[in-house]
Image (cartoon, rainbow, N blue to C red; front, side, top):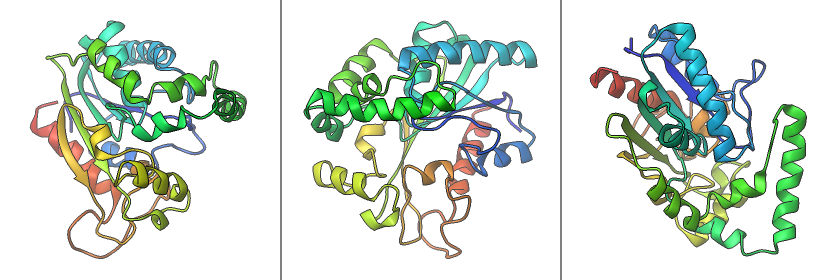
Length: 267
């Protein structure tokens, strides 16, 4: 059991839901170990600044309800950016013991740089369709276009300067990659595009784009499928394979490693 409770912070495109849990079987890993698990509940397509405000309120409420001193935060994708901003600018650094990020675009995406060179009305229209759907799902202030901008290398370079790591918080990051574009039908097209522009990726982001703090390296599966951006949060709700060998056979293996690392550090 960890010293502090766990807060799971989702990425873009999905919301925390009682009906369909963003994190699949993953929370059970932590609760089986005796840990309390909470969810960020921020907007899916909210900007970094807006979501950070929501997370500030959420964290303060959890601390008040549990009387815990701090939290261990595990963030997927853009959720890591939301948390870093909240830590640096919104006074919750004192309540965070650790921040683990999984394929968070800390260093931006050269592929997004290319996308943003397309006609602005086209990119905005694509984002607007997503915003409309997520507003119906509960987003209060979705702004996909601004979120797209926050994934550019220009934005993240400036973001990293303005959001330095807190020396009293342990930061670690993980990267995952697909083996080929046929590995995941949901991510096949973006994987092929990013692979052409930047190299191996999880369907959206490359290992170079997600390195931050104590980088734990690339997590690979021992199946022929690899690990996609969706697999990182257990979208399929099942093992990759029953085979043994180099790599993980289940995404839960990565989260067990995260749990053990936090235990070893007394968090």
